[in-house]
Amino acid sequence: MNDHAHLARFMEAASRVGSVVKEVDSLQDVAVYVREQSSGRTLVPETPLEKKHNLKKLLTASGVDVFEGNFREAGYEPAAGVTFCNFVMADTGTVVLESTAEDIRLATTLPVIHFVLVDPATILKDNLAAAGPMSDIHAGAEPRFVAYITGPSRTADIERVLTIGCHGPRELHILVVKGISSDLMEN
Picture 1 (cartoon, rainbow, N blue to C red):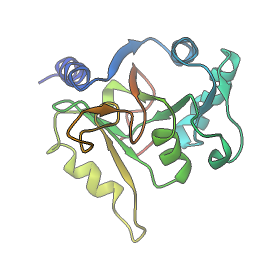
Picture 2: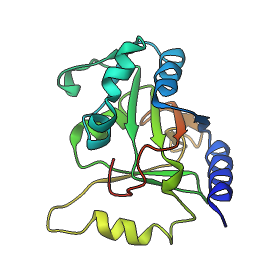
Picture 3: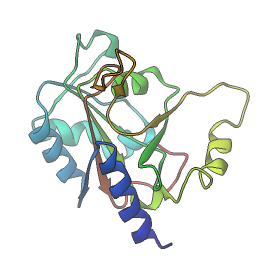
Picture 4: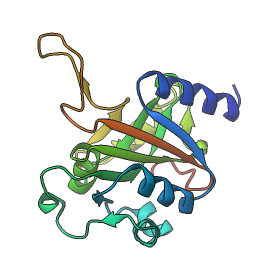
């Protein structure tokens, strides 16, 4: 299966589980999209890719209210969180994000909307193809947190009624942008 087929399969699978998936041309387009889809405080954790691409600056220049400070003090329900990810799995539409840093975990669970930026070069065929990168993430003596995000937060444990956004974001927007980083260990 070629890269284009992986992308098509990923987009279909992610859409089936309730994610909004959109290909965009640049990070400037990401900033405009985030501004148009949400309003209010936006959590953007400092990560190597955020710094490399000056994401906070791009978002702020587009009119997004990027929260600066301790994410625990961002308020009851921030409007949005914007993160990069390590890789995604085409067969399930799952986003995988090394989230040992608390700010990453807060940006992916507290806001109403979570925007995830994905480079198509990091789309893996399935969870079997993810075994090697997962071993690499967990290499070393320090424990790691890893988030597997498949669609918006959902639960059916309250009288078996499906509830969206009960334990996390009500919306998951996956923005596919070429050239972010093909390194599966960078986020």
